[in-house]
Length: 93
Image: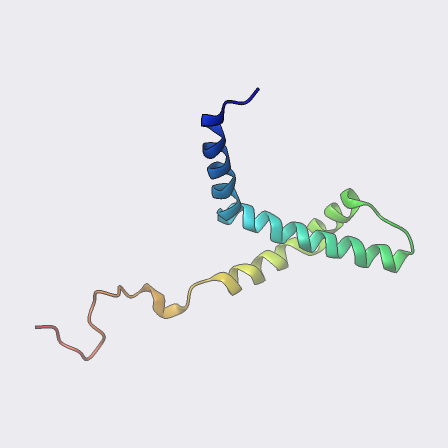
């Protein structure tokens, strides 16, 4: 039997995990693996299964997918400047 006092903490913990960047990365990677599974299964004419799709995707596509994702999610080059510093050419009093 679960005590009622622990449920809000558990729900809060689940929400925290769902919002984490690690979990978001896991979900995005899983979606790509499922797409790969579908495409390969269609190409071969039978269901290749998740494990085979996973191993094949990791071997063939993971590195490139991660590099493209990092580039896509990287902050713009100008974001390193602090919002509290003066822009070049502007003098602060």
